[in-house]
Image (cartoon, rainbow over all chains, first blue to last red):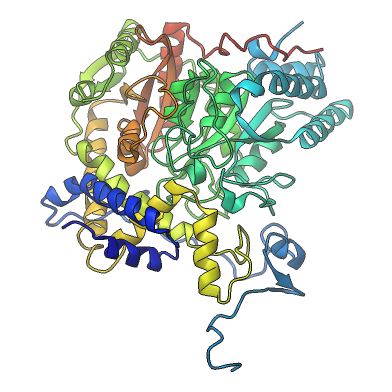
Amino acid sequence: MALSREDVAGIADYARIDLTERELDEMTAYMNEAVELLAPIRQYDLEGVEPTFHPIGDLSNVMGEDVVDDSVRALDIRTALRNAGASRERYFRVPSILGTEGGDR
Amino acid sequence: MANLDTLSASQIAAGVAAGDFSATEVARASLDAIDRRDVSVQAFLEVSADLALAAAAATDAARAAGERLGPLAGVPVAFKDNMHLVGTHTTCASRMLENYDSTFTATCVARMLAAGATPMGKANMDEFAFGSSTESSAFHRTNNPWDTERVPGGSSGGSAAAVAAGEVTLSLGSDTGGSIRQPASLCGVVGMKPTYGAVSRYGVVAFGSSLDQVGPFGRSVGDVALAMNALVAGGNDPYDSTSQDCPVDFLEHLEEPVEGRRVGIVPALMEAEGLASEVRIAIGSAARTLEDQGACIVEVDLPNIAAAIAAYYVIAPCEAFSNLARFDGVRYGYQEKGCATLAEQTAKSRSHGFGLEAKRRQMLGAYLLSSGVYERYYYPAQQVRTLITQDYLHAYEQCDVILMPASPRTAFRFGEISDPTQMYASDMFTISNNIAGNGGISVPLGLGADSGLPVSAQLQGPAFKDRTLLQFARAIERGFSARGVVAPDLAGKGGELA
């Protein structure tokens, strides 16, 4: 079942990647070629085989104390914001999330 | 006077500790080598001269104060540019992160520095580690030090090339499907992907979180063992929940003989389509070298390994899509200006920030995780992963390590492999090890009979038997007397200890 150009445009929308018309053509060809490469996966009889969801077996979750660790991991506000494209005071700044239709809400 | 080309990491550390030369002199020699050689190699995205000289000065001050120096005192090291180091950018060789300023330091980097290493800078790579040639870097290509018309391999191509060029003594890379072992092979240096969980991934930009593992490059097995000691020192990292305690001294038993131990060969792999005959011949010589030292060669089978590439190209793109969803142009990374809505800003930032291969992998992952497709590919791929892991477990009942090629061929020319799915075959011998989570190492075998370019053996071993891998790697190195050397065209250009 080959992926159509429309299918690929739908995936691009879902992946939040704008593609030009030309990129869409190339991506459609790539996606179909790549999916063909994956065919061996579908040729196995996998009845009763457990999936591997973690590369190291027999591990249990490590739980930590619920305390703020300022020593290493917590970034101060200035550091946290310094790579942001836009910020104001203590916040990341983004364009309208719901769009401008319907005015301020 | 000594040249960095011929000094091992432990000789540098010992020389600094003894006062034969200072860490500052070593740092200057490395900067000099980078200055003279990287014009043609282009291994670095950023040279951190100020950080290097400050770290070296601190090492020299510690010695002057009578403090005990670390095992990597004064050793010049490069880091793949997906590793955070405060005071440098972390770009992942992507426009997306071109201006990203590291906000913290990765555990693997911090541990090398804690052992006394001198940080020389950040090495080029395939964008977000998607590739096997470093050609997908958004900034520039890196040239193979043995032939600058050829690729260094990838994705850790800059890390491998910097060591092969003698610009640094050690470097770190990351390996998701072969990204340490394949470039090590193409550049004629030792490169190790430890067992998944042996080295912390904290602060390394994630690609495939169940596959990624950090490891060292060096020009000798001993140097790589020394770096491994530094990487596991201090035990498991609480900031990476998959990081394990590895209380192992990799150097201590390095010279242990391989006599009476078993080396597996997988006949089907040695007859694989696409394997160059010069590589097959070299692997045969490596097997004989181990036999000469008393090891037994046994045939083992990995019956499901043919599906490893397919399983990988389901699992890795899915994990990549999930991991790279964080690049939304808000908190960091490229941000498209003048957008009316957040959705538009996100889609345009991602479109203009990511290169072609990064888009491909994410598109593939997005598709494979979509409803109805997940059941046909993702879930079965994880089941195949179980089969491949079991294959290895059975094989390791019959042998201590498995010997095979690291790369099907020697370094190829720029642009020679333009089809993305053909490029994926570059990792045909390395990928299954990431699927199973086991350790692997590339060891130089000298130059190929046909191409005259570096050829390597790969050794794979059971989980958390990385010390055994290093012992066998050392045995091959001993037999070949082919310690990775600085590429001849570059050796001696700068790098003198003043």
